[in-house]
Amino acid sequence: MRKTLTALIAIALVCGLTGSASAHIGDKVVLLFEAADADIADIDLADGTVEDWEDVFGAPNLVPADFFADPTVGDGAQYDPTDMDYSIWTGWRSSNNTIWFAMNRFDNVYFGREYDGSSPWNYEAIEVMLDADHTGGDYTGSANPDWTDEEKALNNNRTAQQYVAVADDPSGRHVFYLGAGGEWVNDLPYADGGGNSVGDNPTESVIEFFCTPFDDLIWNSPGDSQAGELTPGKIIGFQISLPDTDQAVGQDRAFHTLSGQAATWRYAERFIDARLVGVGGDTGTAVEDMSWGRIKASLQ
Image 1 (tube, rainbow, N blue to C red):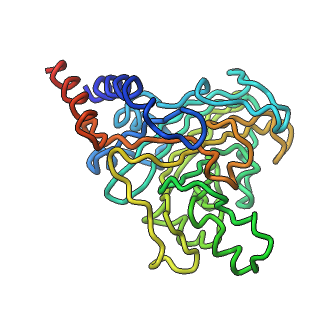
Image 2: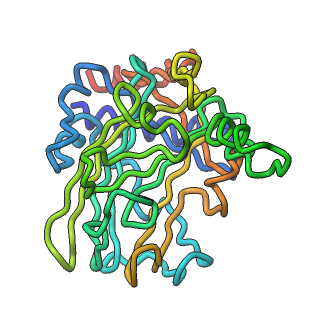
């Protein structure tokens, strides 16, 4: 029943809500469904499968048709399921303001097992970028040449954040925030992950993780940092990028992104939008709640 409800809610929301949302880039809006704490408890980040994600969230909400193949990165290869194929689940949890991700991926040439604990973005990974307060801007601070090194460290990833997750990781952490303060941002209660890979040509890999979008991340002061408050109906900036490394570590054959924009690692206004849908289809407004009520009544 949960999968049926999710599918019907998604249809209603896509038809009725996405046109009114104000996007960072374009009019694409991804729907992120909330999982109650009891359901989140059913997800095992270390089991190496996505069966529990299917039980909690239903079908994957992102597939290759939702992504752009960037012609300017690496070989600029377009989508080819024999080269790289994937399904992605995304959701959120209100009790600790976290965004949840899982990816099941098939890759004919897989460099993920070469990962040695440094530079995770150079390997077979999933990169996610989050702007919880929807303010956009240069979130790495790289546009200000007058800042000191201390100011650069303070402002890098402060108002939006980039995380990278890998399936094979010698540290067992699997998810990495790309900024100063990673020793606490990458740790509980803010982030956690798991993953594994099996087989060759193709290799099937699974990455599961959650991370925290911060309105104000102060790398050397966790107590003063402010996580973004996630509530039904809220729209956040959202971006996913998927590199496909076929030739050598750090050399991409293909690079798939949700926004189709360059330099999303730097400019948050180049993200797309994600709307948070609460448990039971709550989207924070009376009109949208009525739509959910009609859907629920039709199933009784």
